[in-house]
Length: 538
Image 1 (spheres, helix red, strand yellow):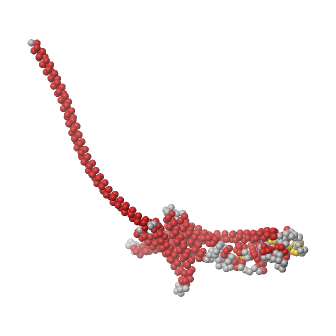
Image 2: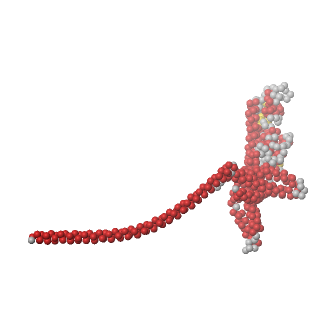
Image 3: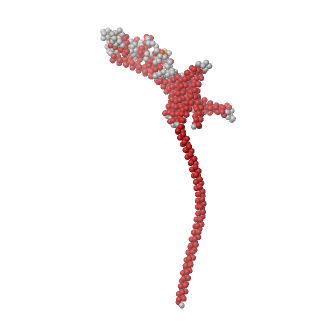
């Protein structure tokens, strides 16, 4: 455990150096130099455009359009959206040819007049179903369709949809004068001005079914045209700004990795040079050149990793731009939150990739550990970014620091966030070590008891091994003795065989002598018999 703790502490020191350099070079260095974050992000959302102020409007052109949309509606404003008299009359004549009052259903005469139920004969006039005033006040219409041409707001596209046949209705002059720029539905439900309490719809004999159909057609036309134009505008801007941010974020990641490797290498080589001194076989210049060459070689080896980081950075840059846009569709984000989203997106992507798709050389537990460390760095960095302006403002209040506040603050915040990130990563490592190696004290006691039992068992094995070695030695001596006895028995066997052969020869010789003796006895016996027979004769 002591060795593990020392290893963790050494890793903490190394991580502090790595994290501090990464933070100063990355979020608090290259990011601030390369990116100019804006309130609300790079693309103006309808939510931000609908605010009274233009602090969250992305571009200067959109700010001009926003200012135009804030203008009070009056005759001058109305004139921008109206057709020329010739164009207006042509549209009126086309409607008269259809021969119907589009609100009441009354017949329109060829001469362009209408006979009302009260006997009056009045002129037929064109009315904007959705009034110009209402269209002028629609934020989606202004943001989607208004353009800035030669420094001036051009409402030609709005003029086109507001005067489209879908938004024009032929009706009688008194009704048109009464409706004016009111909303058609609201106007119908209102009591007739100066009347006896009946609604405008009843007084002017409006066919509500017909007028409602016309109102829905006109409203759908306005909204569809505005929303399609807004979608096209925002999609183009998202692709444009997303590609730009992807390229810059990818470049930042690649440069950040290579610069971090370069600075780390230079720092380590300088430390070794100070500690070990100059090689006796080289001059100072040669030694420095060799060490620089070694550092540059290590940087070059990191190029493939830098390209991988560039790809990941590009994806996170594009996605952060899109996420910022989506969030600003619901609430307005200050530029520091835009920075947090951009710089945090890559960390979140790496953390969840690590946790959900662990590398082959890692277990799920180890991947979770590394993922949590990345998430911790993301959180600490985000807090640092949010505090950056506050710290800069505070430092600006100190007279001798004011000229350098903007320069010192990122470095100071980078150092603090780097150290805090490394310390929290160290605590996570310690937590996982405790989880893996010491669930509780009883478990540790059991480990110690088990170790003692293993020690006793090992001692018994040693004793048994020594006894077995003694037995093996005795067996070896017995085998040698048996071998000696075997040699003796072999010699005795040879002698016995020789004696047996001699005995066999003796037996054979004896048998011959016995045969001879028996033959001699038989001869003597026969001779005696012959002598006795001879004697008996006499």
